[in-house]
Image (cartoon, rainbow, N blue to C red; front, side, top):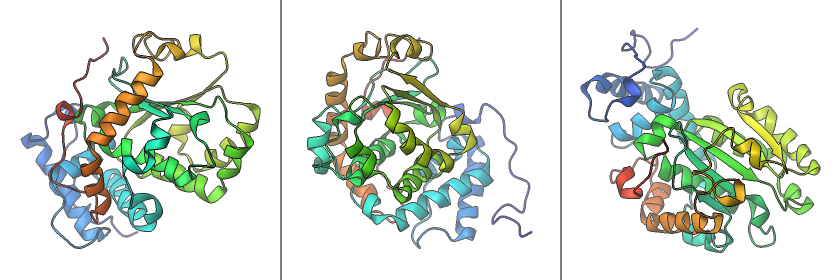
Length: 302
């Protein structure tokens, strides 16, 4: 078999502490150089300036500094951006402001006990007459682009809660096998984020056929991290999240869901210019990437 591009030499030695090192650490430079070389040799991206260190580090942290797996993830990311312009070419929060104002989505202000970001999607707030599935999917991509700039999120990943209260036949008819495959592939193996857990609440019986469409496209590791809690979910979620992280609507005593959704909408609007730069860039590698302190002051869970 042919060697993977850029993988002919022994890779730098990995240690569990690598992900904890700051971006400018000397120990990370060898990994960044190896990944840049491998990407150049693979020829997966458009011609242009070399990929920046910060951009490459997102992919290295997402795959625990395994250069070969990081390269695969990077090439997948560049491929879906190229092959799916109907999704990747518009990352404007203003274009979906009506949906965001329906309290559809939030990134909670506090991380969970493991340091993961906690995202909530309230599917029932999606009016299928007003918003296409591609527009709804773009909300996830906007959030993913922003939080993937956070060093702590690169290290600790994310957990998502999908609230299916209000899921209807109209929602189910929007999801065909082609779209299900595209969404699954982008979110599970084409984006530099570690998905630590997926929690479904209020899922009705007729959601199962849609989930059956999505499930085959998910990696086995992701399948094992999916939890279906049903309508009686409040006590279940406490086994996974401290109450002070969750909104009261989800069994916690953090900020209410409407407040959390509005807060995150404001954050997305604040970064509209950066998101537009990412959408317009051939690789999504922009120089003026904010780090976490610029995005929002956070309170970490104990």
